[in-house]
Image (tube, rainbow, N blue to C red):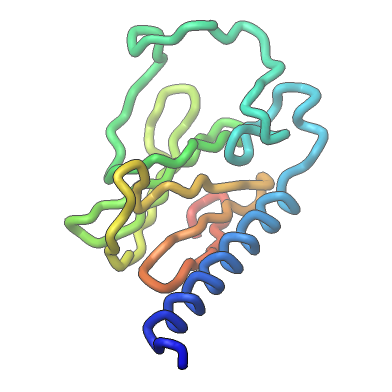
Length: 164
């Protein structure tokens, strides 16, 4: 006879895997394929073609904080990759003290915040090399798709480019 706790954990794992798969598929569908030719938008994790390689020119081969055009503090902690579309850069973070998941949008030119939004996030135990805001957002220039992980569930939500 199976242990009910083991069965429940198996169901949670299956659901978590399904939610991650849905997010990956949505990210793939939303990202245009022709941007990898131009170095264009950095619309998802590891860029437009998923390799982490940009064809843009003039990018330094080494980078220090002194090379940055601007720096801004995030409203929480996060390990996700930023995404870039046009003159906007989007990042996610999580504030464990406030139990919130945060999405911020900044102007590329000067780092000024364009908008931010926060939603409740249930806390859970994480791996030492992971974080509550590890999933990178993805965009098609019209929508920003974000995955929020919580105990027993993953939630995918979409915002327009103005954070609504």
